[in-house]
Length: 89
Image 1 (tube, rainbow, N blue to C red):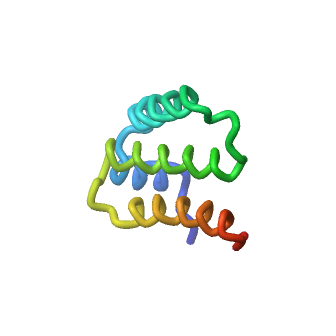
Image 2 (image 1 turned 90 degrees about the horizontal axis):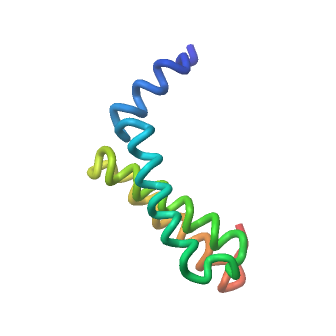
């Protein structure tokens, strides 16, 4: 049986903290990116950095011991590194 939206939000809140706090951290990190030549980067590089900011905010706001968040950061970086070496996914 699928979970209700309320159940999913409760689980995410327990793992990652309050969304409003997460959003504030994530947006603060992303604002820093825009200060430094961000606009000249390729779309996948921009998206990877934004997703890394998102994952960093989850770590800072919630469960810093949740290994999946750390693995996701490595995964986004690997996608860009692979493309730069000729491997697109």
